[in-house]
Every structure is written in C-alpha cells, then in structure tokens.
Length: 346
Image (cartoon, rainbow, N blue to C red; front, side, top):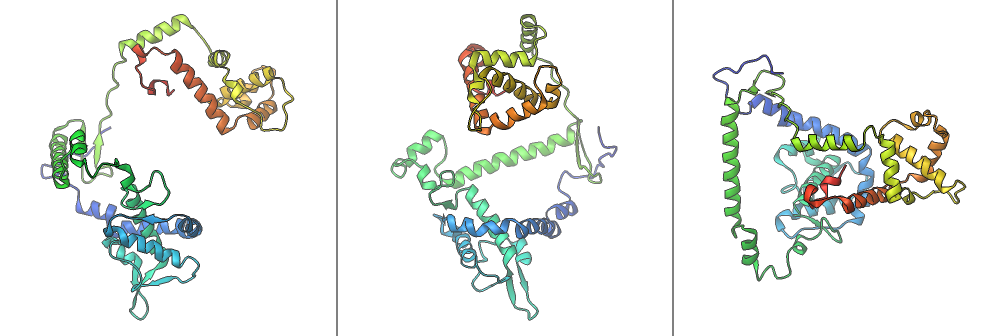
C-alpha cells in the first residue's frame, strides 16, 4: 500500500542531510561501535591471539603496509594487559578512518593522546577484512586469500596486452574506471528521472519509509508449466510424497549411504530402510517424527528418534543427496532442461 503522503513540488530526489547524518553520522557510528565492542570484548577477542599466531599477512603494495604493521603491534602485545597503546608507536595513518579517530584516540586526564586498545583492534580487524576481500592483503599458504600474483598466468608480464585484448578491457586503469563511472552516473541519473515519473513509486521525506513501491502484479503462468502439471497429474494422480521417496530409493538405493554410528547393527537392512524413509519424510516435509509415528505404520517415535540419531549424519546425508542428484542428471532430457545443473537443485 502507498503511504498517504504526497510529494510537494519542491521536494528533491536527494538524500536529506538530517537523515544521512542519523544513518551515517558520528552518533550512528558510535552506536554501532558500542554493539560491536560489547561482542568483541566479551567473547571474540579471546580467539584473536590464536588467529594471529597462526596466520601471516602480507601485501604487495606499500600503501597497505600500515595495516600489516598494526597487526604486528597487536601480535606483540597479545600477552599484555595494558588498556592503552602509545600514540607514537601505533600506526594510525592508513588504518583509521577519519570518522573513527575520535573513537580510537582520546586524551587522558593530563591531555596526552593515547589509543584505546580494544577500539583500535576492532578498527584494525575491519580494515583487514576490507583489504582481504580485494586481495590488497593476502595470507601465506591460503587458497582463497592467496597472493594475487598467483592468480595471473605465468607469462602475464610478457603477454599483458594480449590478455587485456581477450578480456576486451583497456590497458589503462583510469580508462576503465572512467568508463565504469560514466556508466554508473548515467544509470543513477536515469533512475532519478524515472522514479519521479513512475506512478508505482511514492517518495516522501516526512514518512518513516521514504520510498514506497507498489508490489508487482503476479505474472501469468507459462503455458508449458501448465501443460507439464496436467501431464504429471494424468500419469501419477494423487501420488503421495512418501511413495515418490520410496520409488526413488528403489531405483537409486540412496538409503545405502546411511551407515550406523554404533559399533554394530542389530536391525535388518529392510527395517533400517523403512525407518530411514519415514525419518527423511518427516524431516523433509516438516511433519515431524511424532506425527509420522502416529500414522499406524508400526514404528514408534522412539524407534524413529533412534534411527535419526544413529544413521542421519551430515556426511551421509550429503552422499545421499549427491546420489539422487546424479540419478536425476542421468535421466533428464537436455533438449528440455538444458545442460545446466540448476534445474535439479530442488
């Protein structure tokens, strides 16, 4: 539903300064930081020395060395109980954002500025996370966060021009950034123009939700989907899910993937198979084991619970899912479903 507030002719489609200040200003940052500090100082900080002793961080760019030096500083003082760092020995430039300096650096009773240790550690970890995501900082011996030079072909330095030609990218980074910036600017400008004229969008600076969008109408069901449903209904009318699960096991024997975690198995394999199918049906449909056991199938709730605890493990369940998925891949028709794997996700 739309908000019952109209846009005045003088309303501009821009971020209001007050709203921006509340959502990104110092007050908001302090509130977020207080929540993060409570979680970090009371729990997560205990594991930090173990992580720093195990991982070694490196960077190929001198611009990001202050973050590496900050990590080394935290590592040196991991066994110390001091609450503050000296500002002289603490890397600040290149680590602290301008809007975070007042949170991390504060004067003491004598007016000497010093660094709050816990707040500094939080800021350093946030900076490290950002640099790891873009691989400006990498981890020795890692795979996903390895040295970015290892991602390049061995002959990249000699054939750089050819690789850029294959990727259809400019050699100069400023040309690439300029083109991307121009595309984004044009897209945002077009969004700005179209939103003001779109009757399904309502914008108001005074409302709690500044932007209100009318829900889209449901699309018509494709004719092929309707035909497919009709064909399935004609072939297998009123077929229960438990029958489908049983038929899949008869064809693929995926229950063979489940092995008991006990030392021995006293039940027969047929009885284990029956209980496993009932457990999988109850858990997969959210019906629950109690409701399944109440169906007069000759299996009690305790027996199903025992089967679940002894046989349904994470690794065996993954093996069973892989067996079923591979069986679907083997019988599907590529001319209908294509060569991709997403059609078998369900």
